[in-house]
Image (cartoon, rainbow, N blue to C red):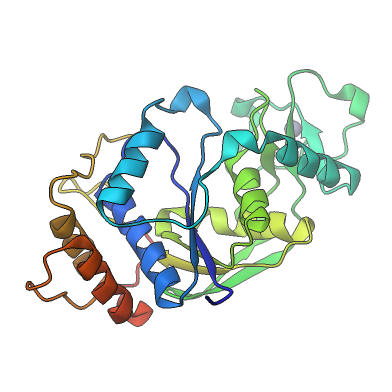
Length: 284
Ligand SMILES: [Zn+2]
């Protein structure tokens, strides 16, 4: 075992589609190729958007494709006290502040209206935002190379706890990646926009910055990225080797000989063959 720790972290809004299988496979292969640990985290933070059956379907889909994780599944709904603790830490260190702005007043990058509002001028309901100044944020993405952002222009003060009391996705991801000792984040390029937010948050919480690999997204025949919102077809359980072969092709990896007909044999070969340099580079 190396000290590499990777993870797959789906939101249980529905079953995995081909695009999410690609993400799961990429993070699995990268972890196993480096003899690392691969964790599964279910990001069930937003019950109204989720499906009750999705976690068990996702688990079934992963197991049917031989993508077995290490240790127990971490469910984010069990982690609320830790998120609350971290929000408090950020408030105490003045890295966060309450904001009662309504959505229609807010541009894409928040202007910081509530930054210096006196506490008693804030009315219910309010959110908490992270304070972002002229911070330069950059990564050396293992697929895309150098990517950088300007804190003030590209990120702005963003929400870490919502008005409705739910913790924001960005906060939960960062707190849990640190809690689980994640060293390597392998995920789709649709999450590249979240990366500077997560890096700023990790920095303010005193966490080390993980390594990143953003792989290209899978688009459907209609030109839209596959997503649960557009009702992309669930990955079927009947043809796991075929699905895995398609995912390997998408990731630019060498084909596994047809003579290998079982999932475990196919994955073993794919782990051995895994080469990040072969993944197509795309920021979407
Ligand atoms: Zn505000």
